[in-house]
Image (cartoon, rainbow, N blue to C red; front, side, top):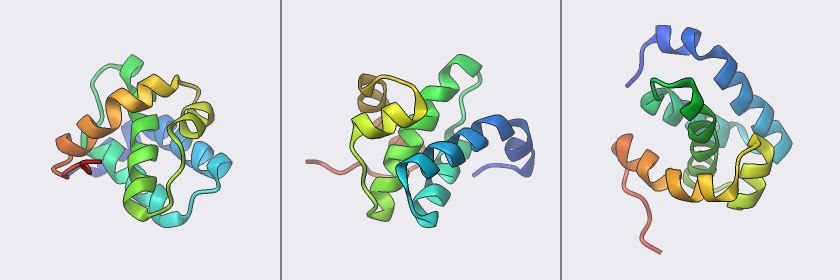
Length: 102
């Protein structure tokens, strides 16, 4: 779980989630899930936060049933597809969720 302070301290990253969700035409549930995932697993280092934004968006959309491709999410956030691929399962595990076993 996260604190209200986390929301304030990561305002720019939450805005990045909102912007990318808009570009991806994601629904409110997917955006909300992505925000919760990000705030629950926010890394200490700023350089890692963009990758977590992308992984959060991908996983949040997946959970909400509003799936987008890893490439589309990566393009919307400005990271590589490989970044999304490498981070989203780990992010779900860190948040206490079980990633799907495809």
